Image (cartoon, rainbow, N blue to C red; front, side, top):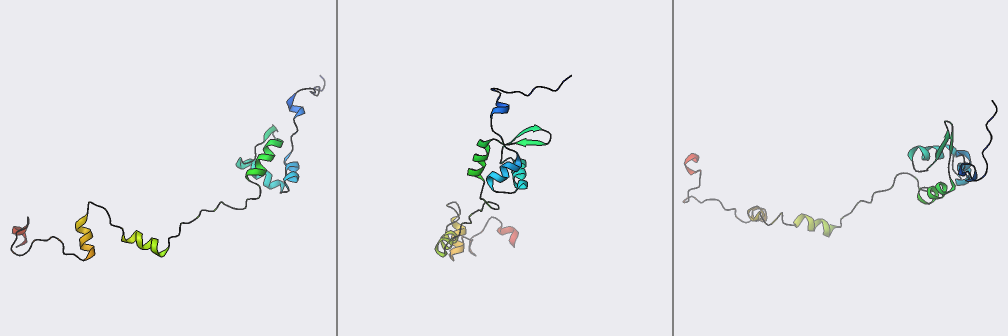
Amino acid sequence: MGMPKKREGDDPLYTTPRYTTAQVAEILGIDQKSVQSAIARGTLKSELLSPRLRVVSPAAIDAYREQHLGQVGRPTRKKQRLTRKAKAATIAKPTGPGRPAERDARAGAASPTPTAGEEGPHAATDR
């Protein structure tokens, strides 16, 4: 039994340039731990050659540089701020076309209640 021969020639395993996490960290100018975290999150694509060796292609480095490098922290969510006029407009909006009695009651108009001479549906039980 001898040592296996090193493959050479047109095999893409040996002809495609790939970089270790330390080399990628140096290329991108960030810490090696940051590269490993990006690989773990899935934002930097890598290949596993052996249980302890991950390699990254130049295309994956370029994609990471364009999409993720230089962004710090979580992306911000812009809050929609209303001006005083917009707040007043949202408060003064009618609640809907199906509730005119409630709108009139809020506006200060008299609500449609039976008067003393009229009998309501529960007039006998009220006495």
